[in-house]
Image (cartoon, one colour):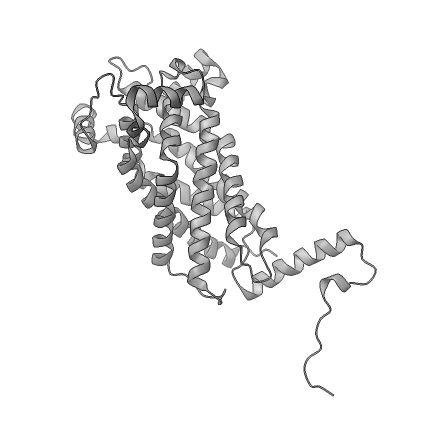
Length: 330
């Protein structure tokens, strides 16, 4: 007789179980195996908390680059443009408003970045956990779909109203007589004049932008992670490696969807009434400013996004590790 330990019966062999129960049992077996044999699946609650913390820290570090990017995108050639480039934008902003001017609109992003990242990572984990194999590995195609779902969710629930308020406040600063005295005053004025709908300008462009953004980022990040770990799902990733992979994923998303970001910004500005819809906005930009206008603000956005995605993924992974030590989940 063989001395080998008896093998457990496959999940489908559970006696007396219905097909639906067999499927549920198989999913639980896969998740349990993943927790032991490879990358631990992350409880959605931990993902929401870790994502919120990561988003709040990241935006405080990188906001000046977002400010410059938005100003350059709003600076239309037909006006003529006020800024000659990134350095000139920074110089004039500090000259007119001091260093604090580079943080104008931060509050709207800070209030939004925490729930945005929480929704993003929470949704991604909820969608991806059932799709992982018995080692916790997620294939690249499924990571693309899960990232798309996470991006659409954050666009509708958080990003669109947050970005609309941010763009209006930055645009307002360019006016001879700024009207908004702060975040809450700006929000109240926008709602008073335009209703809640006024905070959802450019929703279609935002959904397209965020959906493709996160689809590209999670796809590239998962692709690099799978390549790095190879056949050893237990292999740990050093934070520096995570940061490098995150920066690469961020760069890929910038080159992939900056045109959508430009259209979204115009649709959320104070002069959005000039455009009939998202398609008309894109057509007007192409007609009056040329195709190169779709890549306005690419350099400052590239710097910000690479740093953003690197920071977020590193902080997220480290916070999840800490939560795993103090918050025990199945």
